[in-house]
Length: 382
Image 1 (cartoon, rainbow, N blue to C red):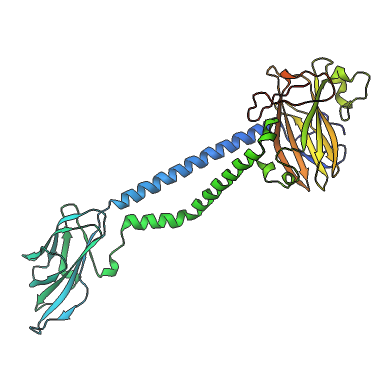
Image 2: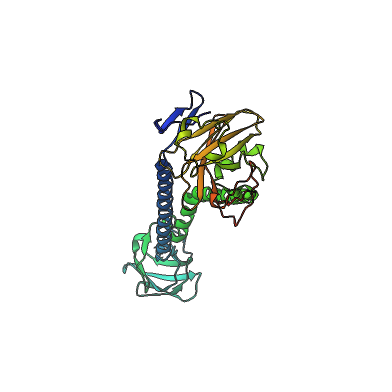
């Protein structure tokens, strides 16, 4: 089947010789897509890093906030020694993560009271000020206060303070907040559980991809790269780890076809090829699936590269020729392939070959990998 002429539009969808619709792209589209994806990845990494730093800083800041509170619940019990006296409970709570020293709870001077009991030693009442030597982090001090001839509630507590902070008076124990740092950490974990699961999935997927890459090492050594989509495709299921639907079977110059039939698909551009400088890459397509397999190929890194297409019937083979008008100085020729199976397209699968090491003596190509590198294959012909 003939290749597309240079005049065909290569944006959107085109038809080759009125046949199967084939997506076409400019070289700069591929480069733009790669750059765009790289930019998106960089922005995503910066955003994730920024959020992590901000959340970590917020948690650290909340963790170091001092939280000192005092409250007086309702009447605890009536005193047994006099009907006019009553015993009230005062709770002094350190919900922070630092020790509070020299805690002072100032009561209304009009209140005449004495400490009956406390759950911590060293708690004294002097001149309407309750003094507590030390309250450890997340510790709560409970004390019973006998109040004479007066009603007592949280409004009678004027202030609560320590050497480092001034606390707050709460109406009831229910109004005392949880530890800010722990609360922020729990909220962050709850909010972040979905991103965590997402990135955990990404890690698992990355590991699976690397494992699959190891399985496809033989294919990579033949010069094939960008196989991520192929690894997860239906097409992959029909081939072993050492196989690929397409393989390079020959490289010849135009002069080698003197006196023979022009290869299929090259009639329209045959006169544009140089007898000595141009080479023809001959690929064999082996369709091992039960469906038609469409293969589109074109030179990568060449402006307005002409695409060539083959539709291969189930369980059959076809050849496709890719003309190289001028071999690059590096000798590395890159070809991009696209595959269509059951209306699913796999694109940007690349094949690289070093034509500088090639010497054609026969029509057969025996491949020998020389210093294989990812995405590059040096093939020697014998």
